[in-house]
Amino acid sequence: MKIALIQQKFHATKQTTLETTAYMIKEAAQNGAELVCLQELHTNKYFCQSENANFFDLGEHFADEVLYFSNVAKENGVVLVTSLFEKRGAGLYHNTAVVFEKDGRVAGKYRKMHIPDDPGFYEKFYFTPGDMGFKPIETSVGKLGVLVCWDQWYPEGARLMALSGAEILIYPTAIGWFDGDSVEEKTRQLDAWITIQRGHAVANGLPVVAINRVGFEKDCSGVLDGIRFWGNSFVAGPQGEMLISGDNENEEIIFCEIDKQRTEDVRRIWPFLRDRRIECYDGLLKRYID
Amino acid sequence: MKIALIQQKFHATKQTTLETTAYMIKEAAQNGAELVCLQELHTNKYFCQSENANFFDLGEHFADEVLYFSNVAKENGVVLVTSLFEKRGAGLYHNTAVVFEKDGRVAGKYRKMHIPDDPGFYEKFYFTPGDMGFKPIETSVGKLGVLVCWDQWYPEGARLMALSGAEILIYPTAIGWFDGDSVEEKTRQLDAWITIQRGHAVANGLPVVAINRVGFEKDCSGVLDGIRFWGNSFVAGPQGEMLISGDNENEEIIFCEIDKQRTEDVRRIWPFLRDRRIECYDGLLKRYID
Image (cartoon, rainbow over all chains, first blue to last red; front, side):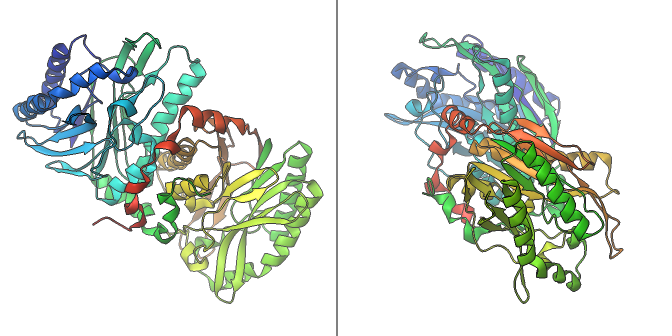
């Protein structure tokens, strides 16, 4: 199965960005991609750099965006993983991945479960933690374990998706550097981000896909300088082996061939699921064991 | 804190191996190591390459070995992490890490929880799965999250140790290549082994230490050729950054300075423990969610 990761910048306006995305999806489909994956909150700039109640306006367009991408998926005949700002009710918003079938139907949704809150990433202000659990989305190209960004730091999310039969983990992401950090710190951060996700691939014997934003986005509140999104979208195979990776500053479509049989083969030589000590894992349901 | 990893071969006899180990521990102590970590089942060849009931004899010497290493720890004034074959009762054996204080007292034990069983690694024949849970061992150099080999493929073990306050994860290991595998497969295996453990460091914001055997050991049953233990003992910091690594064929003492303050600093910028969705993790206690 050929998949495509669309690594993008925000193009000054939502309209231009949407058009660029649609164009890249078309190009991906024309090059044989059956599954196309977009980055986190790809229809807008990364608005969580500051806490501003006006930005909740961006969530008003969830239904329109679903309709838009439903059409894009249908026109191009691809399974499409999107990441949208969902207004669910007044004062109730989620960071939601919506997956579309090749015929434009909504195959399923995933509401981001782990919500970060750090300087420049004020997501707890905007997003209610997901209440749909860690459930893979059934599609014509397989069961997709769609998770979002901060989830990638949690082995629990990856494991729960795998235990529920996910055949591939997909992380739409918006992560980047602060220019003020040292080169060493930046290197450690990028490397940690890649490493832990490759680790999920190894632990669960399945491919992992991460799609990240590129470009510098200014903090419009002026408190911080802004975030330089580090790209490096990648696909790892079920032994954690790097199959392909994007660069750290350019828009690009990253194509990758996924061989689903590899999961079966790798899990036969590394049958980690066989030996889990589930009767001794109660502590995982605790905040801290003290 | 300076630590030392003793990466070793099996030296034809147990006596010679014990003497070499004691000599290397002495050298480590003389060079300032306060914590010395040994590889898995370091007093013997890796006997699990075949299923042979006579090898249970090796477990008869557990008490003697505890006494031996208690003296070595005391003589050198180091905290010492050993990995021994423990006979607990007739027909009841464990793969047990015993940790000694600087004064020779037993600080604590850990009985390997996840037991592998693959061609050449017939551990389910020899070892009853541990029944002491995932509890860090309190020592004068900190709370040590000692786990053993196959445990390293399980994010659950690492997380449980971290939640119980472990300040460092330590994995005595015996893992290697089959000469018949391709170079590509060998590379993927070694890299997966390093990557998943670095991933535990990232997920839990603490240093990870892996100590592995080197040298080729023939399969005395003649069924397989044998295992070429791949060394590469290493220490990763709390962002998963590689601090130091051994090579793949030589005996060596690997020294590393561990800065425990880094865990505090890294967890402040990456507060993953804060955002765990413990109310949604019940599925982790299931074998499979089907």
